[in-house]
Image 1 (cartoon, rainbow, N blue to C red):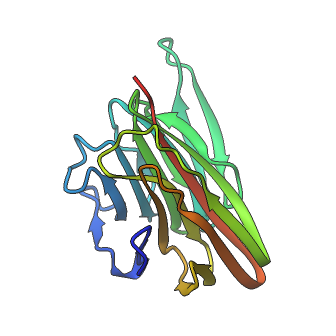
Image 2 (image 1 turned 90 degrees about the vertical axis):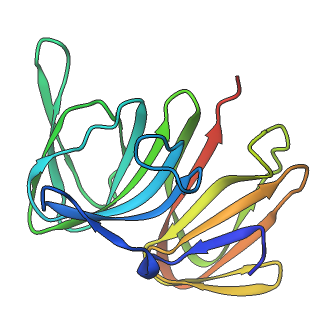
Length: 216
């Protein structure tokens, strides 16, 4: 596999059951590697929610959430200091919900269990942007050089998560991605990664995540 890309196979990721029994999580990526839930800089995961209940709190973390499968979820979000709350419904194909990890949220499933996609970044250190893209035929994804960044030797800047099987070509190498495999495009300082070509005979949706370090 080319050193400028990394593929994290969804089926190979371990599933961790929640302590309250309300679901489970597959952690696709955490940075820096080997860190835990208390000291990571960013984290990408997919969770199965099988019962109603509160969201876990993550202090100092900004979160983004998308629904991948299931009917959806109703979220009661606690608002200001007066205790005012709002309710929203999040379904597949909706834009990502952005919220702080300190926010108190109660969730209620609209049907059976759901599968959701989570991106977490440490506030003040990193920012994340999530968008959905569609591929039918061929499209190209370009990773731009960003040599001003100073994150060790390699900087992950783009991640692609296909919602259905899809093929891609990178520097002449053909790669098959299954549903929810995470493809990471990385950059080496002063080196442009190039283009990744996605190929699909049927309309296939992908989630693209761009994570950037905040410069001091």
